[in-house]
Length: 365
DNA sequence: CAGATTTGACCCAA
DNA sequence: TTGGGTCAAATCTG
Image (cartoon, rainbow, N blue to C red; front, side):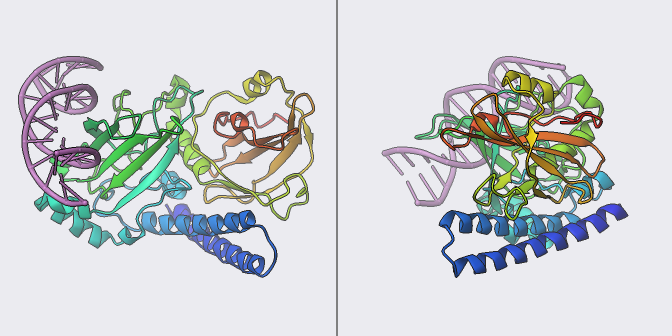
C-alpha cells in the first residue's frame, strides 16, 4: 500500500508538472505561427494531465463507504483505477470529488426520485474491438443490473439502462446508460450517474462471476487470462491512460507534427506474431526513432518505444512500443501506422484493432 | 430457486 | 403530446 501511495503522489506531481509544461509550450505556441492542430494537441495534453491528476486525487482518498470494507490491493491502488474507464472524451464530474457531498446526494436521491437527476453525471466513450470477440465495452469493475432498454429516436441502436446490483441491499443508486454510436458501432457511449456507495461493487473488488451477456460490461476471457486476471486488468488500465508523445524526439522527423496517442482499452491475446504475419509484414523493421512515454501506469525506468519502417507494404511507419508496466509485465503494442502514399493513418493498424500482448521478454525486434 | 434479463406500461419533463 | 427514464411482471438461466 505504501508503494501505491508513494506512486500516486509521484504520479500526481508528474502529471501536474506535465500540465504546467504543456501550458508553457502552449503559451509559446500562441506567440508563434504554430498550426491550430499543434495547439489543440497541447490543449488536449493539458486537459488529460489534469484529468488524471484529479482522478488520482479522487481515488487516493477514502471512498464513501464504497470501498472501505475491503482494502484496495497495492497493485490496484497503483493503477489509480477510475470509477469508469478514462477516455479522451470523458471524465468524472469534477464537482463530485467531495465524498461527503456525494454521500448527501445519494441520500437525497434515495428519498425522492426527482432528485436523482441532480446526481453527478459524466460520459465516457469506450471503443471495443471487432477483432477480439468483445461483445461490448470493457468491464468497469462494478456489478450492474440491466433494468431497461429503449429505442431512442434517431439512434440506430437501443439504449440500455443499468443500475447497481446492490441498489436494494445497500442503497447504492449509481446507474449507467449504454448507447452504441451510430457512426461507429465499435464505440459505446456510457453515461454514468451517481457514485457507488456499495461495499461490494467497487472496481478494486471485481464482481464474483457476473453473466457474460451483459452488453456493456463483459469481456470474453480465455482460461489462461482468468488465471492472472488482476495483472491483465492492470494492463488494460495502464493502456487506457498511456500516452505517446512524439514531439522533441531524436527521430522527430518521422512524424512531422507533435502527436498524442490515447490508448483505447483492448483485450490481451497472443497477437504479436499473428499481427505481423496477417499483415504480411516481417517483424524486424528498421528501428529509426524513439519516443517519450507518459503514463501514470508506467515505470519511468523501463519505458521505451520504437518506430519501425516497413518496406514490404505501403506502410511508411509502424509505431511500436515495447514496455514494461509497474507489475513487471512486458507489453508490446502497435499504436499507429501511416500509409506512405497517402500519408494518412491506417486505422486498422492502430493500436486498437491490434491488441496488446504480453511478449516474450527475450524476444527482440 | 434465486438472481438476471426482457419488455410493455407508466411517469414526467420539455 | 412526445420521448426519455424507470418500473415491474414475465421469462430466462445457471
